[in-house]
Structures are given as structure tokens and as C-alpha cells.
Image 1 (spheres, rainbow, N blue to C red):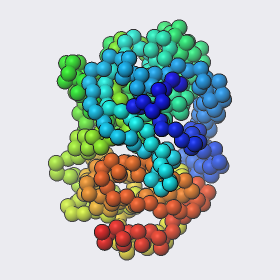
Image 2 (spheres, rainbow, N blue to C red; image 1 turned 90 degrees about the vertical axis):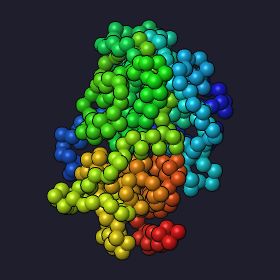
Image 3 (tube, rainbow, N blue to C red; image 1 turned 30 degrees about the vertical axis):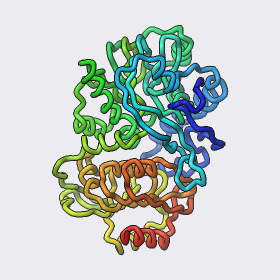
Image 4 (spheres, rainbow, N blue to C red; image 1 turned 120 degrees about the vertical axis):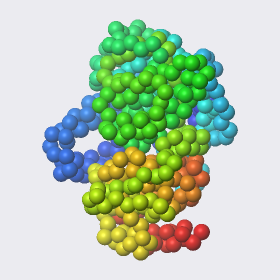
Length: 431
């Protein structure tokens, strides 16, 4: 990929190994839990996806053959060469989202994201179901799918999905600049479909694009059609209604789309401005009542007046559950920390709960996305054998107090050092 060294939008070099799209060592344990939770049919569906997309198309097809042959437009090139309508400055470097950017490392890996902008790419092609956007010359527009540090990986993941959905020939035809007959056409559109449809990727990587799109609309008088996942969970529609985008919204899945003008906002990282915009846009002026705690009936709704101490449970997840849950519960009880399963709450309830929280504790996982809705918040993140900077950076962007504990990996789960957790909570509450 062509990237000007140390230019805005490029990565400051590191010796950290770039991760593949899935840790294969955890597969047996994940498969067993998936079978117990969702049944054999869902397990077979996921196994087929893993084999086709991750192993054959991503690891073998993209990593071994395509990656070095793809012509990509980096962020710095897009800004220099594209038709940029909106621009705002961003000063300083940022830690990357991957493990190399974690604050616990001796020298966390950083990159310079450059300023935020919106560019127009004429006569572009969108590869379904998750991108990327491609120019008429066959150049991949990286900011349609990733930040600069994650560009190579996310490009590969999304191309693997396209090759599976649209066929190898059609995908390679677009990448070669030869094009293909489109299944759909849009006059003015922006892609907002994450490569993995979970709460974090949607909330922090898709919704913040609307911030710049609204500035684009105010500048040009035109609002792009926002392309969203084709069969989304309820929280996608609910969060979209809360953000209340001023343009049209259309579902985008498999297939290839021709876009007369592809509007490309800088891929959210997110910056403090993006976090604050999302928090202010989605948080109600008067927090709603928060329903169902884990194990309780929805009728037992509680009010969020006053500070909440929240433990984010992962009882509905296939990985990173806490193995010594009973020991952990003793610590939670000592500090009056209530347990919630975010997946059992509506988006509005999650926003209301976390907007009133003083302390949030939980294993690394999508439920911690909700710390974006808090103010003056303390966050304690629990890890197994691997640390990653996702919520560490989110806490830093919002000025939250942040601490983490390294636990012990127990298969696909983690064992928490409850004595260390007790000391950490006590220290934070005394500050």
C-alpha cells in the first residue's frame, strides 16, 4: 500500500505483529460454548464462515496473494488528491487501537491521524456487504473501512467478504479497474456498514460518521444516503433514531453498487470531538428509567438518580466470561456494585444507565462501549492473557479515570485476581 512515511494518516513504525482476523487457538472452546448456547445449526453456519472467509479468502487469498498487489489510497493521499468539502484540524498523535497501543506497554504504538475531513470520490464502486469503496481505477479508498493503522487488515477482511458474497471474478474485476455490472445505483451515498456487526463497531465506527456528514450537508445543501447493514439488530435502528440523521437511510448488503458521488468522511477513531458529539447526541436531557438487571424481571425497573456503580457482565458471550464469578461477586457486593447485561437493555436504557454511572467494572468486551455516555467516570477493565487498547483509548478521549487488571486465561474465559480488584476499587473510590 502506498503511504507517505510519517505523513498525517500514516503509522509510526513498530515491530508489533499485525494480528490476523481471528485467534484460532481459542476455537475448540468457543465452538463448544457456541454449540451449548446457540445450537448446532448456528455453530455450523459460523464454522462455514470461518473456513471460507477467514481461512481461505483472507489468510490464503488476501494475505498471501492480494495484499501486495492492491493499490490503496491512504488518508493523506485522499486529502491531498480528493475533492474535500469539509475540513477540521486535529493536533497530535494517537495511540493505535490494537494491542501495540495499550497504555501498559513500555512504548505504546502511535500514529498521526491528521485532521478530519469529508471528501467526494466520483464514479465509485462499493463492494458489498461491507465495502470497501473503490475508484474507477481500481484503487481502494481505505477510509471507507478503516483507520490507517488497521487499513491492511480491514481491507483484507472486507474484500474476503466481498469475494464470498459477490464471487472472486466480480471482486477482482473491480479491483483491476475493469469494473462490473452493478446491482444497485446511488447518486450520493456514504458507507456505514462495519465489517463485524457488533455494538462497539457500529456505535463507535459508524454513528460518528454522521457528525461530519451533517457538516457536509450544511456546507453543500445535500445529505448523502447513509448505507447501513441489511438485516440489523434492533439496537442499530434504535440508535439511528436517537441520532436522527437528516438524510435518507438505505440498507446495503451483498452485491455491487455504483455510486455517482461517494462521500467519504474520515473513518472515526474516535477523537474527543467524536466521542463528545455522540454522547451529547444520544444522551437524553433527563435519563430514562433503566430496566432489567441481570437475573431480574423487567418490571423491576430502577431509577438512575444519583451515582451508579456498574459491573458489565458477559453472561451472554462465548468468550471472556469470568471463571471465578462467585469470588468476584463478593468484591462487587462489598462496594455496592450492581450487575447488568447490556444486551438485555435497550439502547436508551444503556445510555441512561451509563450517563449516571460513577464507576464501571467489566471484562474487555462490547458492553464497555457505553462508557462513552458517562462523565467524570472511573473505568476498571479486566483482561485475560491479552490487553488491547480499545476502551483504554476511549476512556482517555473522554478524560475518564482508567485502570486495568491482568487476569489469568482459563480456556476462553478469565480468572480475576479478586484481591487486586478489591485494592484497585478502594484506591479509585478514595481519589
